[in-house]
Length: 308
Length: 244
Ligand SMILES: Nc1ncnc2c1ncn2[C@@H]1O[C@H](COP(=O)(O)OP(=O)(O)OP(=O)(O)O)[C@@H](O)[C@H]1O
Ligand SMILES: [Mg+2]
Image (cartoon, rainbow over the protein chains, first blue to last red):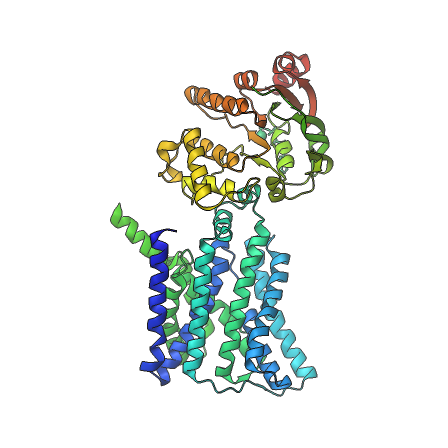
């Protein structure tokens, strides 16, 4: 174990403790922004666990997140199951989906994977809407809990911290090392004895789990759940944008991307509510064109320049 | 040198078709334990494809490969690596984003005899010393010369302590001094009693290193025997000259 590894996790722990105080010093508007930001931090970090080392752009975030949110709503509304039981169960449905999607697509090249995940998320959204409208009657699903914004914030903070810790552990494990080799040369990785498909599927399942868990925890905030809300393609794109803006080569990259972009996005959604798709596309283009390696890439380039 | 022993690898009726092209045509040969087998032949005769079939880069169209009686053909590359086959590539393929030590650890962590953590790093350093990269241990991979990249790739292939080592033109592209160093290095591996399949064009290397040679032309085996015998075989000479 290197000293910098411990320093990194120590710094992260310090930030988590600091972040835990946010609901104590603010409420109302800024707390609600903080909840949104914490949700994206958890989502973007979970996304990076898989997409960082593999370079596969996943647009399945909305599908996993939706499974979490929709199942918790169905369980609580229709079957009177407690929030906590659904929180324990729903993410595993996403894990199974991730395993199936992974096994079916990860042998293909990256571009097919992008299209497949987008199609999958849209298909699930359509399917769930259709089932609900035709068979369940279009009554709403309610997630009624006693949680305040602060509770939701703290739960998301815990998830984000756990995702970060897991990412940190993976980086130091044989799985993380395998991913690094795969990122360098997948053909070589196979010839060194690495089951590249299994390694990628394993990571995708971890991403799926935590993405769904975020969907579960955020559901009480919406209280009224409908498929179009939680199976959101916009969410999938936002997470990709934020992660790329921060940079996916480092675990902390996405966090640096989420914080400014949450504020930017908040401003855009309030000022131009009818043009969000336009701005979504524009942000995507600007980031990919001007800072393809995100803030992490910029910082490291500056550091190198100073050294050289 | 250890005397060649029992049959380790058995290739039978091995065939690979790429569409209409038969790149490897009904190849049959054995590789004995502790033996350096030269796989030679003119350009495009199917040597690399044969190596790719043995290492599992792609499956054969027909025929079988067994090692110690266990079937390798049909397995995926990572499974074959775990059973003790490692290789270098004709066009050198190092891992540029990893340190030298990690490049070698990569060969140890998932392969045949697995090592991990401090033990693997120590083992990797030892291999790098042996292979002549001891002084370059802390350089970035990108700054290595061509021969040093080839050395690194060889160290990575050795790191899993394979039963069979496949070297695809490991000596190609070296200048005369480097070539002599390279030949010495492989000679040392041979003295250690390793089992090696050597694809090579350099005649001096073939003569001095190989116990036996299998000669390919247009995908098929045209001769087999000691280097001296096959290199004086009229059909082999014709194949090489006809190609030039
Ligand atoms: N993946 C592939 N797809 C289609 N054709 C291939 C493929 N790999 C090899 N070939 C063809 O198979 C034949 C044998 O190629 P191979 O690379 O095995 O020859 P080689 O003996 O290694 O030649 P060299 O000495 O030039 O390295 C060639 O005609 C080549 O074009
Ligand atoms: Mg070749």
